[in-house]
Length: 343
Length: 281
Ligand SMILES: Nc1ncnc2c1ncn2[C@@H]1O[C@H](COP(=O)(O)OP(=O)(O)OP(=O)(O)O)[C@@H](O)[C@H]1O
Ligand SMILES: [Mg+2]
Image 1 (cartoon, rainbow over the protein chains, first blue to last red):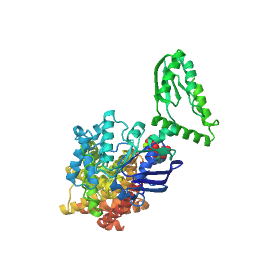
Image 2: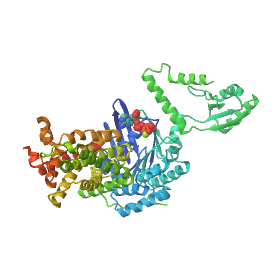
Image 3: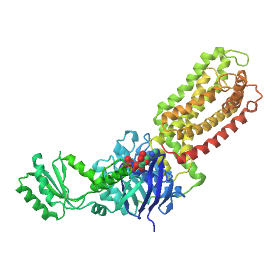
Image 4: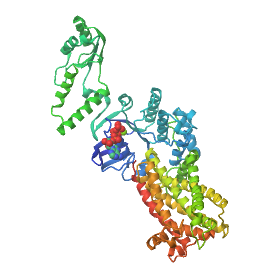
């Protein structure tokens, strides 16, 4: 059975730009899909197609069991949307904005008012409820926009970079609200540039680039694909980078593209992929000590989603360049030479 | 704490006319609140026609021959129908600018993702503009009375004339709406919404006696929808300078005015609503 959000082969071109180049998605009911990708990857375009705002050139989309292309108005009854840029009426107060949206979802005036009050309270906007949105800060507008998307607590929600511009406290609060929604059975498609957020909220993650899904899976699956643990060392001064490099080189995993020591000159940080965990870490420390390398910091690090993101989208970008014949050397050589240059 | 997930009772899908009306009124209310919070827009809208009354009647007043006389007071009476009609049409540039602004700010996207009646966003806007136009016309009528304009055929006919004017204004605001949806910025919508109004209002019987124009211009002027309303108003107000032309719209100006306005609404509403569904900023 297809999920609450289901897309197959979505294609959308704007002139020469292929914004979507065959996007497939499936989000099971009651789960959160994190849509990741670099700027211009096609995240917003995907959201706009799924929320009936944009007609795709080809492909199929079903939301809440309803065909998006055939019955857009029925789909609109079942979705809530918070777009990438806050869409609130600046000359209306926060309360008036929410009441209007409620009325347009066919609530009666009284219900719309009650709902607006609840949401204002919930989004920390009660104090500013009767001020025009023009006087709101960026984060307040963002929250008002999110509140507008939740007016009818629809079964399927779309949020395009919902926490961009929110302070840490309000971001946490929104995460709480999202988790509450999902616990209540809502299906959510979320785009974000904060990978920590995807890690925290999303059941599944899709990485898109150049209008195509280039990886999908749970965050653990994606991390496992990218590689295992690493030892990270920060040495005390620049003189010690060379000996530390020697030592770490011995511990690195062999194999193509692995085992090399990465050096970040300005932070005096060296990183090497390893296996062996904490036991190995103790050995490394002893060895470094024996060589007289003074260290400021050392640790075992697991890949983050940031690493996943950079390795995936980095490859994709390089491959695209290769195809265009702009990059004569192969991707790995280039990465190596970048590291040489960093020495 | 459960506010967000609380079940919400809506009256369910209503659809049809009743939803169209409610949605349009909700949007109209929103636009009226906006207008009340940007009073300078309304005030500029009032100053412009008042300036036209003063400038036209005192600068041109003595040199225009209307019905065989160049008396400034006769020209003032002649002029008012033209100024009224011009005022209701100029107010339509506002509709276009407002819609372009909504699109620019992403509000049209917000509306388009809601289960609203199809034309409600545009209908709401044009209705709000109609209210503003009516307000402007009332103020203008008071100023006109102060400079010596009078109605001579009784109040009911005068009210009928005002109804025709508002109908024309409403029709033109749909042209403004289409322009607003077609351009990329509110600024472009304002200028784009105004430029075409100059030929439309000047190649007409509004400010001069059209029967003295060169023949080809005269034909355009006489069949201009704008002229029909001006002619109808002069007749209904009992003001001087009713064109004696044989052209059908000049002979039956009230009917011509109604037909033109309804036709414009039908055509441009259809085009604008279609454009709305696919428009992107
Ligand atoms: N209306 C439009 N007209 C022309 N090109 C567009 C339009 N909308 C999007 N694009 C192009 O489509 C591509 C995908 O854009 P999209 O907004 O979906 O990216 P995104 O993944 O949301 O990026 P970001 O992280 O910056 O928000 C981009 O190259 C963009 O320039
Ligand atoms: Mg985007």
